[in-house]
Image (tube, rainbow, N blue to C red; front, side, top):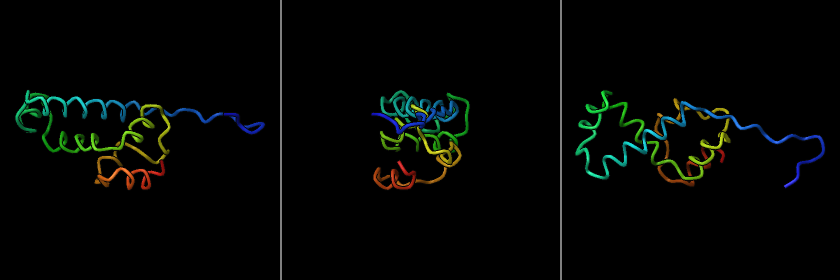
Length: 102
């Protein structure tokens, strides 16, 4: 792909906090799915964090693969933050992409 004359490629904008939160969420989901921890409360106690916080971060595992990929590559929209992802978002991947303009 070639860019028009004088245009530069968009710079990646890595959000390490968001990347770390997504990694933790998927790790926690794996621990729950494997049966290593029976409940969110058990896992939260083991991790020494509040169960509601863990629950909010676990929602990140419901993001569409394209959105996760964009975040990991630093291509997320500038207004997409971890705080905005902690709020409720649609579980339907098409709706997520439309909402986040990806």
